[in-house]
Length: 263
Image 1 (cartoon, rainbow, N blue to C red):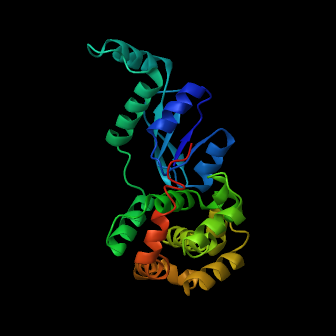
Image 2: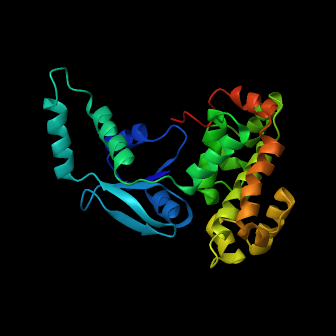
């Protein structure tokens, strides 16, 4: 997830083009909420110095500031950077932002590592549709407490989303959502100083009791068990066995990029 405070629609469009196809780009009030309760990988704004970081609950966040000086430099390079016709401005800025994301210390997040390990446990690349849903839920669990917002990402109702899963022989998307949110609980509770109540608040769960019941019903483990590294590793295997069989992966493939290429 990328958070941005940009008000210029052309610049925002450049950020959206620079982002991964499976991640949210959040702006305005949502950016502040995402910084407090989500797990973004970078921030992009329009004031201050061209680089640096901002602080959030998950640590310092790499920050790019598209100030007038930097944009002026990029515009000169766009116009005079080669013998061919200059690229369109929005695309060129997106190209430069992608370069910054690759080269300025934007390290893999815990979400990247979880998805990598899930792919290794499955033994093949994860379907793009699954990656699109999983990354969004893991990076901002509080935004996706139930199926309504998940379905809204792709312009569907919760019922219509369930029907798409059912027609492809998949478990309910609600089951996937509960497992993904449980993985987020495990990550937050890996901090020894985090209480169950604090984890519930961080993840948009109404109470510590509801967090305990949801995790136990979904995974069979109590939240205190999730503080142990071997249990957190085992959760990935449990999820693969429960929800990511070869048949399930084929069903996700049939969703044709749902959640992946979101306008």
